[in-house]
Length: 355
Image (spheres, rainbow, N blue to C red):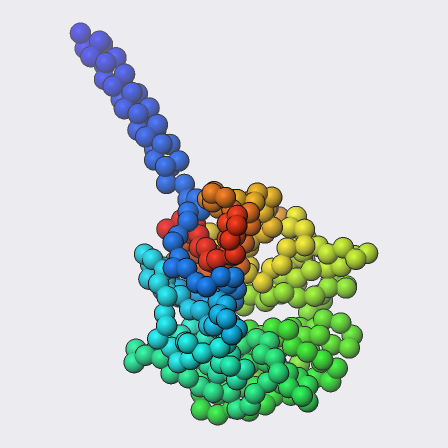
């Protein structure tokens, strides 16, 4: 009798373990993150997305412009962790112009604003919106970055390249090394650690400012290449994305600085433009790529030497779905871009992975 009881107990334990294991597998597959569509209030199409930045899972901002009968109008959206809403309370919201890069400076949000041709920095604090005008009007406003204690705007006027620096109170103009023709982009980790990528008379060059002057950073870029973006991470890691041209054909390259040396890889991304590349919550690099499905977006995940792909949700009657910008929002990834539905002009779309 005792032997039979022991056998029954073992069978019960074995069955319970099997059921528990099956439940765990089912649960794991049920919570596997996937891309889902997020509603976005419509703008006047066709629309153009400039930037997307997130402070955390409950705050993200997306910028760009929509089209009115007399030209572009600035476009600003806010994500509150649940839904997208449009913000029209900032200065110049109803005037011609466009919004560019979004930066988080302390507890504030800073956004570059082209207001009828004149540049300014929009600042949102607990008291609301305010604007910091640039000291001069430029022909082109190429890029903007801001950190606590400093901000830069780069562009051109009738005299050539301009690097405008703001220290929180005053604007000054900074000089660049001889041979620099144009600054294509700028980013910063701190007020004394800023990086830029430039077109020079010898090709593309990466510059660095250490708080005193702009200098050649001596980055060994691939021959015949350009730079799309530079990611400066709090850990000290740096990632550069760009394209290298061989016999007129472009291929994407990634360069990583691990604190000791630069390492260059060529993931199978074709000629993907890497400006929207971000470090995801899983530690891998994520970026939108050209989709082979007209009705779905496509994203690449680059983790060391391994590259994998995922698709956004199917969109009925879509003929072109283009994620334009990505941002890490806590444990999730947010994207913002445009979707063109058959017979209509491109309008806004947003997708989320995880969360």
